[in-house]
Image (tube, rainbow, N blue to C red; front, side):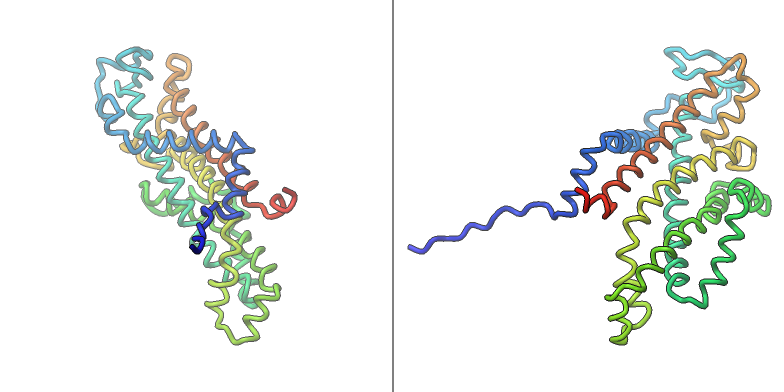
Length: 292
């Protein structure tokens, strides 16, 4: 009777196995992912986690300290700070995610073309250098001043300030990749430019670009909080961590907890994103993979 060959169980690919082991060696990255996931769940479940309407005004209960009824206290208009902080997570995470995606996609497209076409490189990069010479907060304020204060305009303004960072990263990668033998072979065989960019260059830029996107997300949340704090960000009728801290700055001596809680949530969220980005950088770094 012929023996039947039993196929061996499939194991994870070496790449994913290395990524998994790298994250295991960096517990801080796992902690950052857990905290970030908790913040995302808080933002998604805000209508159920919030105790009251974050915009409900009640002068009778103004400036109450944290208690069993009002966990984070109330502000000068009697609004529940806990509910406002919970809903504020939606604004910060939405801005961070939207800016990271938009800046990465737009910067990737510009960087691919700019890095490969030498005649276009000098023109586009001088524009990017000009944008990067202006502090991001000041540039965002100038862009918002040309329009009206809204969440959409805040996202657009911050995205414009973050695009040059992505363009410079992708351009530097393309300048190296276009000299590789497999790219030169594709050019010699008559492969068209879009196919070369998509098939041969784009896959090799995704790993560092993904890491850069996490840092852009964290930077965008901080910039949004700064803009809201100085009154140039989201309008007051939208609860955000920056708005809450801006309204509490004159009450820091008598009700410091109003400023403490949104600042703590913002710090934890930004820290978790940065820790996750550090872990991804170590996991996706090919030089670290060779050393291991």
